[in-house]
Each structure stands twice: as C-alpha cells, then as structure tokens.
Image 1: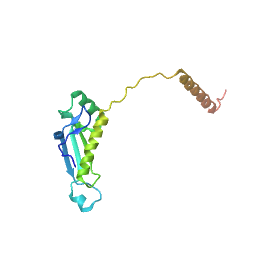
Image 2 (image 1 turned 90 degrees about the vertical axis):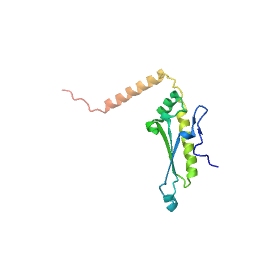
Image 3 (image 1 turned 135 degrees about the vertical axis):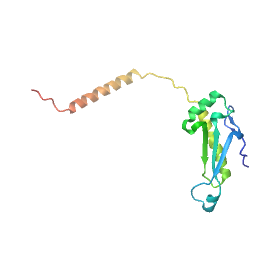
Image 4 (image 1 turned 180 degrees about the horizontal axis):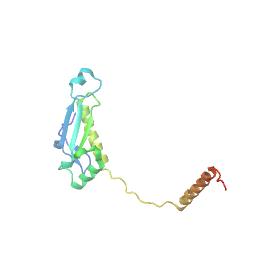
Length: 146
C-alpha cells in the first residue's frame, strides 16, 4: 500500500514535515524503457520549502539550512528519483531519501576537544628536519675558495 502524496514525513520526534508543504512534480524518465518511458511520468521530484515552513522553529531551521548548504538553494530542499519504471516506487524512494537527508542534517557533530602535541613528537619532528637539512646540505656542490 502506497502512502498518499499528502502524508507527513516523520524525520524525528522534533521534526515532522507536513504533507501539505511537500511539492511533487512528475516527468518522463530518461534512459531505456521504450514507449513506456516516453509516455509515462515516472520520474519524481519532491521539494520542501524549508526556508518558509511553519513546522520548524527558527533555530532548527537555521541549523538545517547551514548544514544542507548547496542541497537547499533558496531554502528549498529537492530530491529527484527516476531509477525505476514505476512512479509509485520512485515516490516511495523520494520520501525515504528526503527523510534520510533531513535526518543526517539534524545530526550534530561531536564537539572537538583541542589537544596539545606531545613534547616527544615535537622533538622527533625537529630532529627529522635537522637530519633532512644536513642531507640536503651535503648534496650541494662544494663552495669554491678564492
């Protein structure tokens, strides 16, 4: 059983994309398939206007837009699927991909804890540079004395 086009997408407990804010576009898919591919609108384009939605608080919206970057030009997140010859399957895949994309954008990166370079590592690096310097100096042609 296929979900209706207006069914909401539940990304997490904090984020549910309302079905009435989803924009669907259907087009003919490229590639093989003969007459079926030329006549049937199986390619699916699913868009959600994240910048103007009422379902997301401002702080979360800013974070999602920053995380999605070029995936959301002008604040609109778009997923395009045309892999199968069935519009129903492509629709299901588009919903799943939008959900995964938003779930990944919601995930917070762990806070990096700054650490110092160990003293031994600094000494080894300096010694390595000194040895390399000596080696290069020995490769130079001898200086002529006057």
